[in-house]
Structures are given as structure tokens and as C-alpha cells.
Image (cartoon, rainbow over all chains, first blue to last red; front, top):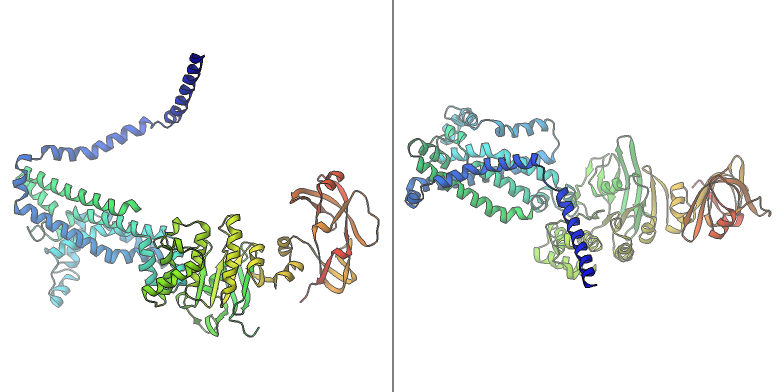
Length: 284
Length: 355
């Protein structure tokens, strides 16, 4: 009797196991997707692994404290942060106008905003020189009227980084604004909020996750900027030599120090991204 | 009605559609704009709020032109003394209930702490003191509705506007919330305009009904007069009456070339005749008796309707008849069958179609 009951229980277990297994079998990932996905992941991660493996760990502490490395790092973080601030200041209103105001040629403007995305950064640097250079369209006037020189200065680095990074912010924020229900702004208006107050008190908090994502993308792009910076701002240690430039320069003379600089840039950028992600993105 | 707080003629063109609704609302009065979807009710509400400009006409509140295209008079939404309860409430998701309610007072220049205190008072009044710190997504539908009402009332608006205030609620919550909403609307000293497609909401909440169909006012009046004497098929359907229009000549109203209904009321000219489906009796053969209107019709539909069976008849006039299940079984009602309908003259309501 007992045996029979156990058998029945066993069968039931088996049936249950099969039922559980069925959806798993049906949900198996097709190899045609899994294999390229794995290769893609390796392709992205292997170079970083190479960087870690080839790092001169024994001389690392000493190399890290070399003044050049820390100066370039500080300059990179400072300029990327300033560039992001500039992008927020100009890019958020631009995104708002693109998302909320109907005007002729809006599609053209939207296309223009994304041009720096597809433009090779070096070309962007050349274009900046043509406008803000000492003989440029605005540069000459800025120089003679205000005595402001932009090329080959730290400000120039910030401008070059902002130029290439701003589209990331504008696109992210405009997308968030379009996705946000504009009727919240109408509700704010019925409660006595002007359009500006509605923007600061209702719209901005609503799109905060998108804004944060855009700012992080923008900052990361600015931190890694190379082509426009070296073209427009040059490569002066302490003034315009950011980490990517320092890495490139070191590569020509000393591979090991190039690896160390690269590792530092990697750790700092990943660290900051992870920290921001926990702080902001989790609510998104 | 010279003491109207709100005096408006809302004219809005949207493509081929024209909304033209005159509206006068006295202080403390609650007017319901009732109509089918697409009648233009919400557009009218948005125009009153300044969220949609008028094409013509005017919106005058307490003697001030808020919108008058003819003179260019325009007061933007944020400077109108209004409160709006939106259909899906639109509570700001990033603010707590109390901060949602305090938002209006803050924008009207009230200092932060005082605005919070006012908001707390309002939340207490709508019975949500305990939920003050909750975010909108932590509130139930009924609670969110009450926060939205508190938020709209917290700025002491001269004109309160409600767009389908109960439509997003389930049946049970709706009943409770309707009663509570009625209490708050009665207490509101300003004018109230609410938009709904639900006749029950309109009858329960409003002092006066304005029925809008296809952008026009088709009927206006208090609840009892509108429900007793509907003037369009839409209203008749809403209140569940059979309604016909015809020419009256004494006690007879000719509602179709083949049928003249005898009515109890005496009148002449264009007239409406209305009667309840339950007043219609069905017979397998022509019934005897002179005090009845009788005509032959074909059954086109049979449905359960509460405890009874509702029978749709085609014939000289289309008519809905409510009969008991026993009678329906006895008559063996099936679509296509011929039956005789009978209505007593005393069961009919006849009234002039003009004025």
C-alpha cells in the first residue's frame, strides 16, 4: 500500500518536473542568436582583459604618482564635467524647444543637432578652428573685442568636448520629453504655474531619469574625446592634454605607461558610471 | 439669470466640426454637460480652462473677459481663477499627495509652510489625512480622485471644471465617491461645470443638465424635467424611454403615416410623445379596448433587461417593450414573429417640440 502511494507520488513528481521543464525547453535561446551574442561580448570585453593582463603591476604605484598622469586625469575629469554642464545649460532648452514648440524647419534643426554625431571628430575640430580660431569667423572678433582666445586653451578643450557630446544629451532629453505626458504641464497651468514654472517644477522632475541618462552619456563621450580636442585645443600638458591625448602620446614612447594611463581612465569612467547608475538609473 | 458668475458662449471650430455651446452658471450652481463621446464636451471644458482658444463667442467669469476673440481679450490658463479635475487626474507623480495639493497655493504666492497647512486641511476634508505623504502611485483610484479634487479646490477657484470625474473608477468606488463628490460640489461657492457621458453622474451631481450632441445644445433643464420630457433619441435612450416626434391635433399625435397615438395631454402642432418600455403590452392578436393605442409589429430583438425581458419591435414605429419572462415565454417571442403592441393613452407623456 505504502509502496503504491510512493509510486503515485513519484509519478506525480515526475509529471510536475516535466511540466516545469516544458516552458524551459520551449524558451531555450536559439544558437543562431546565442553564438553571435557571445562573440560580441568577447569582442567588447577581451581588449579590456588584455589591458589588465599586460599592465605593469609591479611598477604601477610608482607610475601612478608620476605628476603627468594625475594632471591629465584631473584635467580630463574637470573638462568633461564642465562640458557636461555647458551641454545641460544649452542642450536641455534646445531639447525642450524641439520637443514642445512647433516651428517650420523643425525637422531640419533636429537633423542639424545630430550632425556632430556622424561627423568625424577631427573634422569637428577643424570646423571649430574655422569659427573660433584667431582668424576664424567669430574668433577674431572675440580676440579684438574681449581679448578672449579659445583655441589651444583649457576653455577650448571644454568647447571641443561639448561640441561632440551635446547631441547625446539633446537626443536623450528630447526623447524623454516626448515620452512625458505634456498634459501634466496643462495641469500645472490650471494651478497657476507659468510655462517656466511648469518646466522647472513639473517637466524637469518628470524627465529626470532621461536627463540623468543623457548627462552620463554626454559626460562619458566628453571624457573620451580625442579628435576634436587635439585639433582645436592642441596637446599642451597641464593645459589641454587630457587623458586620451596623454595615452596617445605615451604610446609613441612608452607602451607600459600608455597601458597604465588607459587603465586609470577605464577605472575612473567605469567607477563614476556605476556610481551614477546606482544613484539615478535605478529609478528609471 | 443676470447673476450668472460664468457667462460663456463657447465656439470652437475643429476642421468641419463646430462646437457652439452657450453656458451660464450661477454662483454655487453645478451644471453638467452631458453628451455622447465626440459631442465636444471635453473641448468645451478645455476652452473654459484656456487650454484651447475660442474661435468665436466669449468666456466671461465674474465680469472679466477670459477669452473674447472679437476684441482680442485673453487671459492665459495660469492666470484664470479656475480649478480643473482631469479625467485621469494628472497628479504629479514626483510629488506626495500633500505637495500635489499645495502646488496650486504655492503658485498663487502662498508661502511654503502656509501652503502645506492649507493642503493638509483639504486632505483632511476629503478624508485622506493619513495618505498625505503618499505618492500618487501608492493611492487607489478613489483616493487619487479625491486628491485631484482637493488640489483643484485648494486654490479657491471661482470656476471649478471636472472632466468625467468618476469615469476612471470601478463600480463600487464610484458609488461612494459620487456621494462624496456631491457633498463637496454642494459646498463649493463658485460655479461648477462638469462633463460626463454618464446620466447617473449628471443627475446625482448637477443642479442643471445641458445636453450636447454634435457640438450643439439639444436640451437643457433640471434633472426631473430632462428625464421626464426628453427631446432627442440620445436623451430618451439615456433615461430609458420610447420617444417619438409627430404632429399633434388635440389628443392625437401622428408619429408615422400609418400611426396616430392617442395621448392624455391635449396639444397642437409639432410634439413629442414619450412612454416607458414597461408601459407597452404585447399580445398575440389585436387586443380589444378603445383606451389603448395598438399596432402590429415584428420582433427584431429579445434581451434580458433586469428582471424582465426587453423586446425590440419594428413596425410603423420602432419600440422597446419590457415584458415579464412569463409573458415572453407565453408569447414565444422570437425574432421575426408578428405581435401586437398596446399602450394606454394615460401612460404617455406628450409635450410640444418647440420652446
